[in-house]
Length: 206
Image (cartoon, rainbow, N blue to C red):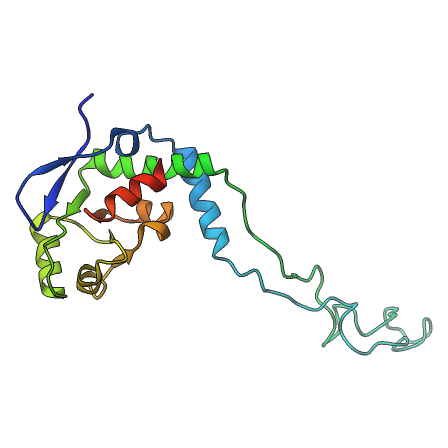
């Protein structure tokens, strides 16, 4: 099997060979699903809450006597059927985090990256392509390559010009290798990685 390659944008027109262990890995959908689900759950705050009948105020005594009124018996106005009463099975703050082993998380990231490499939706960005921020140049570069949106651009923390050039484009997300999530890679229809960020992405996925 030939080593995966990606076109180099913004510089000499050529294809760059990629690390086969990272960009030529086996795609395991169940691991990708598990990682994406865990990332989505990690973003949930879990602060929702409501008062049960034990938490609402009032209702120290029976609202009316047990018999003779013609009404259903009631012990407290804290019950759910009364206005201002407690909520049945009230939601309480909880933690939605799911545990994913580091080995499985790295395998999921490799699978997502390999899917882009195999589909031709992955490209590398030459380090010297942006001397100064230019959103127009970034849009033209994506259009010339044929990259579709939504797109994810992975840059090094020193690539300020690249980050500022792409961050104002519609449906384009700029992120760092340390913050790259599997869900972002799956969501993106095009993935652009700067040459400076490529070793960091490979290290994280290895």
